[in-house]
Image (cartoon, rainbow, N blue to C red; front, top):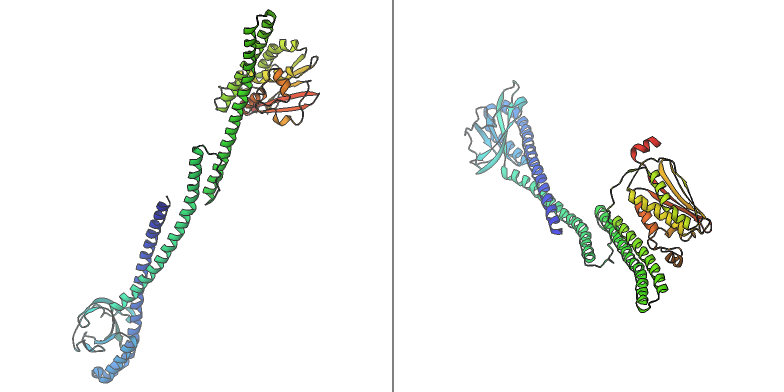
Length: 471
């Protein structure tokens, strides 16, 4: 991956820089040629102005040695080849002896440009044996006529040399930029791939069963956030596995105790043929079986909720359900020597929940109230509608210590383990209540003081249509 990123960055950098260098080089080459043409024109204009009066005054003596000397002097100053041509394009004299005097050449640059400016031409020069850049400027007399032309030329090798220097400079700059791009790309690729490589190693280790690895977030922000998210996910996996292991261990322990009791009683019944003992043990085993049934039901319900497989929910008016449960649990309340009061309106705003799950919630709360309220006590079931449907189950029982309140909804947690086990509790009822209610977007709250009873409150959101009506 690092090599691919580096190659991609280098390719993009090379294409981008190459295109920029090509465009810049062509523009600079054109500008350089234009500048050289302009410089030659200015130099030729200076020479043309210098020859104007000598040509007008001497006329036929235009090709005198004095004029030739003056021409050679200007040629040395301009570092080019100066040629003086008359109006009929006949060479009067030249600073280059290879140019034939009196030869005639009607070349493109011999045109009277606007305002006396010259024209340019690039062509093969027979005398020089190579290409040259020519510029010719007319010598204008007082009456505005072109009496002669000053032709100034330089070898194209000078032009090529200058443009070559431009391309060389651009190439060197491009090479430096490409090298910097390569180093930056290598650094960036390393910053990206190293954290990914570390993530891959840690992921493979976790896939092999080693969950103790921790990733050190590094690299760009996106990669760093990925590492932090992975650590968070890994921690959640570890916590989930720890809870599952603890859950399995606690479940196995809870199942082992009643099964062991049943097995011991069966052994006793096989070795003793006492009718009274048989009757007593059968009743005890019946209670153990009931405890096992409730435990298995709770475990299966919690397992279903943990898997996210919630039963279908429908809008439900909880008032009839609460009245039905109060009637159903009434005999148990009477046997326990308690009083049950129901303060529920005839109808409540519908909530989105499964009826069987809601029955399990209220039944567990009532069952706890019955178990932990001494004879002569009272249990109250109330409900009201505000912005949510609020259901409360209160009792006058033994209450819950403050140190235990944060833990009572944990699985297999018991406030008084010995008493809970004696009464058939496994510490799963309240855990199931919280899981069901929270899965439907609700909350479960508890208030309690030792010796003064407890109040469990269930808060459920009403359906959207009913929520508008309540508001």
